[in-house]
Amino acid sequence: MAQDENDLPGPASFEVPLADGAILRAVTQGKGRPLLLVTGLSGTAAFWESTAATLARSFRVIRFDQRGIAPSTRGAAACTIDELARDCLAVLDKARIDSAVVLGHSTGGCIAQSLARQAPRRIDGLILSGSWLKPSHYMAGYFGARRAILGTHPEAYAATSVLCTYPPAWIEANWHVYEAALAAAPATAEAQGVMRERIDALLAFDGSAGAAELTMPVLVLGARDDMVVPAFLQEELAAALPGCGKTMLDSGGHLFPASRPDAFTSTIADWIGRLG
Image (cartoon, rainbow, N blue to C red):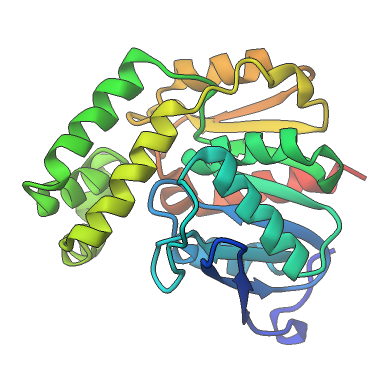
């Protein structure tokens, strides 16, 4: 049952030191069944700000800045999808959570797939939002182009992060999101290096060999007008997972958790509520 916001503890930050020297900043809020939120390419806990506030009425929500992102330090480990999944385990360990529902969006969905293969007993349910299964020509072309402009024109890189990920009418009505993206463009060599290695990691991900191992409850959640991870890639992911549920929103673009927050959070809450 959802709780009154006045009865809930406010967000509490904690640090997660890793063996390679990285220190992750994490946030927990709410009460109830643990729900770990794993961000995509941006890697920020802030992506989930409003979503977490809503979901925290029913669940204990944990989110974090991934290595090298925002206040989380980079550390010495290689940036791979498997390593980023191990970071998720460290966050759960630090929060003293034995098992959780894991919700990963975009690249976060790839990280969630790896996490579920590495530690299946830690996963009560897996929600793969706007994600994919294996490399494709389309993904290589899109992210290859973004990687190419990163160093020479960081503002153009940031612009594509908005213009290709939301429905045009939504951008027009929320122009401040575009302006904020340009202001936060990765201008330093260090920030660009972090983004390059994250793009390389997502392009190298191939979960097809381990798809049959994901026997826990799984929901594939997507939007039919997604231009970053097109619907056909999300359909392919769902078809590869045994007994997988699937919900495709009619619109919302790639970042439908932000553009369709009510539909997104209600779908998540309803699905988790049926896990028992």
